[in-house]
Length: 278
Ligand SMILES: C[S@@+](CC[C@H](N)C(=O)[O-])C[C@H]1O[C@@H](n2cnc3c(N)ncnc32)[C@H](O)[C@@H]1O
Image (cartoon, rainbow, N blue to C red; front, side, top):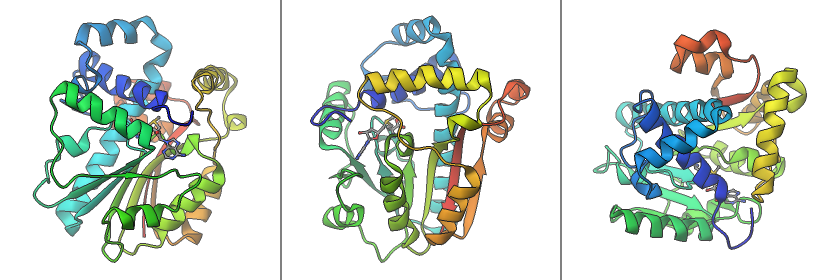
């Protein structure tokens, strides 16, 4: 990331969620704040998305990962009474501002300070109020100790928590990914949803070509992709770090669950969304 500047890829991810509302009516992930937080109208968002058809697969992935995360979160809150949510690398994620469990789920948003300050400006301009007990914690996953940052923000690490960590791990070094997973793995009764990508060498020629274009685009924004994982290696790491249950959806699983009509076109390898619980 470019120091002291808000994340550009956070804007990109948010535009995918907004375009999903407009072009697919939020069919798999409904987010009434996705457009307002951008300050753009539906036509502008649709026009831009339609002008770049190659971005459609990423839009489908971004919508699917949010749908998966919020469904798993709802199960944890309703089924197990979990009452702390940590949104890691929150970007322009809007869950905290439309939290259906506001009476019983406290939200901590963790991000770079420049991205948080920009998000709060965006929310103000959109007239979206932040809940009184929402906590913004500034943490750099490459430099800071996540647990210290959370504790300083009032997080209770003696009680379980749900972590949502979407669109962040690919931008971190493998060491920073491991350090964050180690913190969550050490919290009994906790769970995390995050996404990761198969190594480019595992992709088909066609998928690798598309991947290279996307990788060049984010690198040009100052936010290069730094981490890839072979699923079996990542699962072994998670088990070593204290996770006992892992649900990992690769491209075919995600397509079957969220985009069944086009599921047969899904590549074998690519982006994964994973739920891991301690
Ligand atoms: C692609 S955006 C995803 C944002 C959001 N989770 C979403 O899905 O829309 C990447 C996010 O990771 C955050 N990020 C990247 N590197 C980081 C680091 N070293 N420490 C803290 N946050 C980081 C950025 O500030 C940004 O919010």
